[in-house]
Length: 168
Image: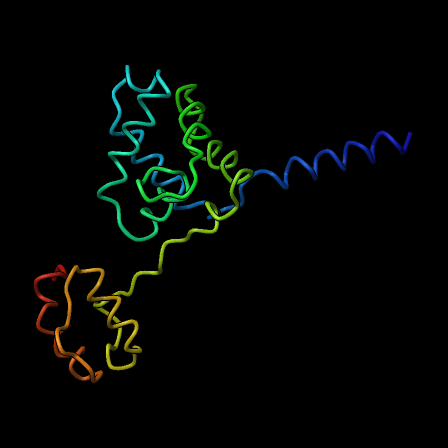
């Protein structure tokens, strides 16, 4: 009688290993949800139309979301393409987290993408940040610091641009 219980326990562990953990595949799920919301009902029924729309959707994405598109094959410069692994389940109305589980089996890099932790400019002491963090703030704003070399120059530039990019 102990043997069937053991088999059930092993099967349960195998199933739970494949399910996504909390916070896993955050970029995948968010991008697919955002993409799905841009599609009309007639497009959602045809996986070829979904693939075409995804390629145009990916053109304006940046950072981690652009990298996600690259992994799926949604960009012209993508080395491989597994768009069918995303578009077919989406045409069947499968939720984004389940689609991401399937994509993870094909390419584990997809679920390794994580959003960077955002710096709260209202509470952080900019002087204590590293130059790379200061550069990231400017990059996130779509700004640059032409000719900046010293940390003090980056700090000055951020302070100049802060009113334009933050809500007071």
